Amino acid sequence: MSALRTTAIGASGAVGLAAVVALAGPIVSKWEGRRLDPYVDLVGKPTVCDGETAVPMRRYSHAECDAMLAAGLRRHAGPILECLPPTAPLEVKAAFTSFGYNVGVDAACNSTAARKARAYDYRGACDALLAWNKARVNGQLRFVQGLANRRADERALCLKGLA
Picture (cartoon, rainbow, N blue to C red):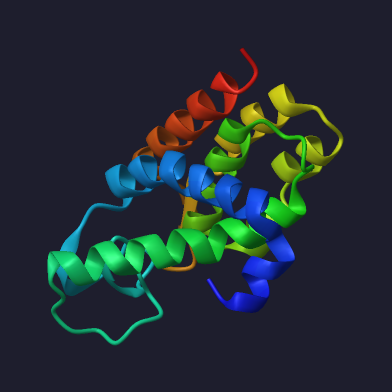
């Protein structure tokens, strides 16, 4: 995290960011899977480690993948936290961070799920995550069971914040 970003977030925000990353990490790790060697994912993107697509495609060590995952989660969590109400429960923020890591921050923040969260309809926001269960494969949008499973895990984490 850059010094400017840390300053903008402040000390309590940095603690909140760390907690969000800690909660989101296991879901991201579970559903992205770790591959040390580059591969082409379902939608045709060269990918390595835990779903990284914007790094040189080469073999990485587990330590390098760990560092990339931590940095990637922080990189996604910051903007996700900015598009949700500051009072959103920690688990909602973590679920949205995992979601944003997978679909991208812009897609996550412009989703119906995020709009519902910004309207303080957290249950509706959690439920709306389930709609993101498709991927564009060979130009066609198709249902992907792995995405449905991931969204169910994200929804379950999201709902924990409402209990």
